[in-house]
Image 1 (tube, rainbow, N blue to C red):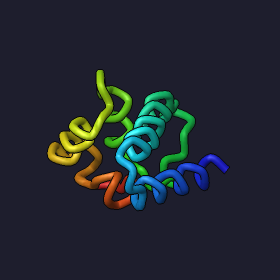
Image 2: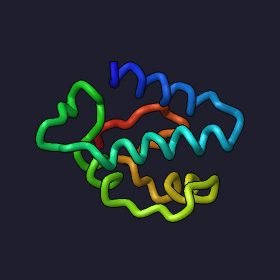
Image 3: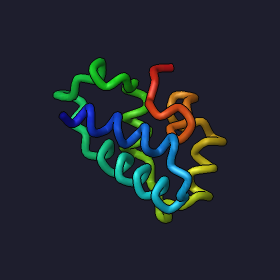
Length: 92
């Protein structure tokens, strides 16, 4: 159920036109991934790489807005994939 909810959120982010909603959904996912216990989490079912999880867990965001999202895209912080455009995390 959690996986299907997350996939649905990714799909919503991908097609959402309202930047505030896009930012809110992305922030929700970011905060969720920061709380993952890697020792018990099955990454294969989630199609997410360990590097992505570590980057998201350790990343400090003071203001989560369009500028921040654009910076994340430019820096390729999520295994060289962009959450808003691709709708999912992928292994490098």
